[in-house]
Image 1 (cartoon, rainbow, N blue to C red):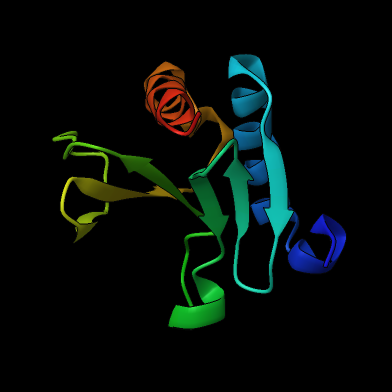
Image 2: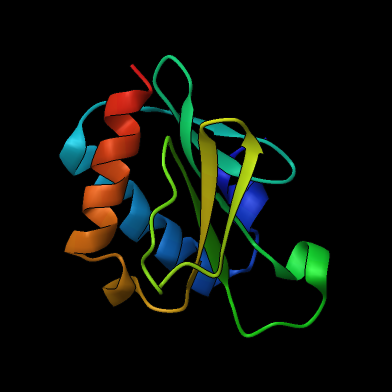
Length: 118
């Protein structure tokens, strides 16, 4: 599957993805893997993923969710949800509605996750 296949005619979601991709690229090299359910950013392991909640949750005003893998629970109120799927592994879900939301704080989270994925 390609990025074009994944995003189809979801232009708002694609714009948000491009903002996330540019942010990741400003940090360092990462492989992009596209599946039917998400687009992942990988080094040795995956560290960030984007997905379109409308595929799973029905009608929503959220075009894209960014999931960032960290080894601690970040307490920012920006997170929609934080879960610990395994001890010491936390997935943080951030709803994105505008490319402006991919800001310095998001870059810091992505940089931390990128470093952990080496």
